Image (cartoon, rainbow, N blue to C red; front, top):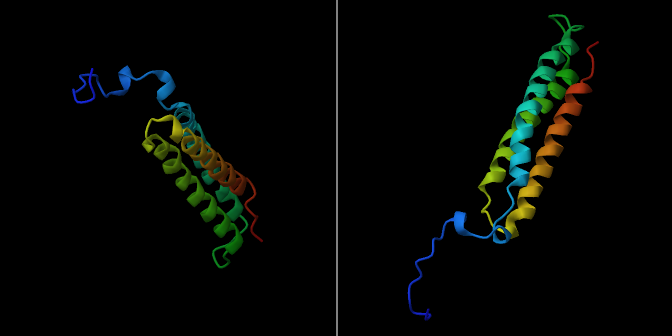
Length: 123
């Protein structure tokens, strides 16, 4: 085929050799981990209400409230990070970005879990 002839090859990923496609392993791992980790965070968020048991209606517990709020925001922020790893193009040079997304997700989810577990008690 000369350089001026049009190619009839498919440009879809199905015909692309595996060595030229990006690995979907990191987004798959992040997506699979999202459901149980989000469930654990929801459980810990419900359980963190015990940190406010020692507070009466007249007193507020600013440290416990701030810790629960930070943990909840980190838990919510971890879900889009895990799912946006699918948006990178499926080329080998973007594999490191997908793995970085997985790492950021694990750090956010782990930090949120640690913050939920270490909520300071009320008075």
